[in-house]
Length: 306
Image (cartoon, rainbow, N blue to C red; front, side, top):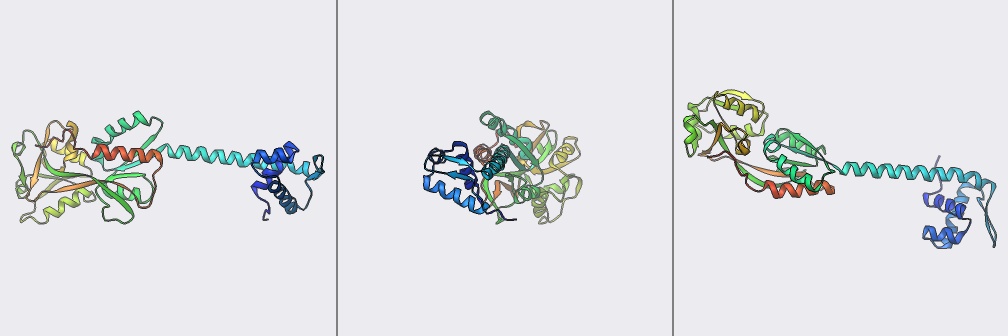
């Protein structure tokens, strides 16, 4: 059944019923008296009954008006509760920011940024999705994350990719390894080493495979780990060497390891801030976005690279 009256008409009736004075009700609702009268008339027409008895001296509720007042007041109260609930829900949503990022950023960059962010936005809750570059991109595209930090998506029309740092790949070796003192290592030198790789599903592996495929003699990958942290653990155990992004060795996380620049060819990845095209961040997310842009764009203080 279609209701033929509006919220403003209910509000007008309840206000007149409370004041029993059209002038006072009009002032309370910031309406002219003729506009208020039209609202009452439209409501009475929709209900097909007179709600108010009006004379030149006074306004009174009719029997139908007294009965309808209880219902109208309850409707307005429920609407107000619904509005308050939605405002609170929206406010809570704005206080949660989800960041999807590659693990090296989650481990070596984001904690310091979030520490600074917490000083100015202590009430904002942060959810971190630390996954592969492909999953970071998907999380932003699907609306699971407000902000992404990764190196895929620059050519994707569904997202905006804002480059913030170019990061070279290095050869992670133990400090007691013969190559640890080298100024740089050529890719064709890897054939003599026990190479440790990351999963084929990793964005890092895709970039590395493109270089390995062009070598005259392809190095053998003796060990494979799903994530960079696993590969670094194998290197630290002395099981071989691994080509990894320099950020993975930042902040002295692996003091027994060193990163030696890879040359001929040099290989790097471009980290960027990723958001949905045409989307608009809430105030909390925008503040974090701006802080990441300032902080992550600066070179890391200590990457462990020679």
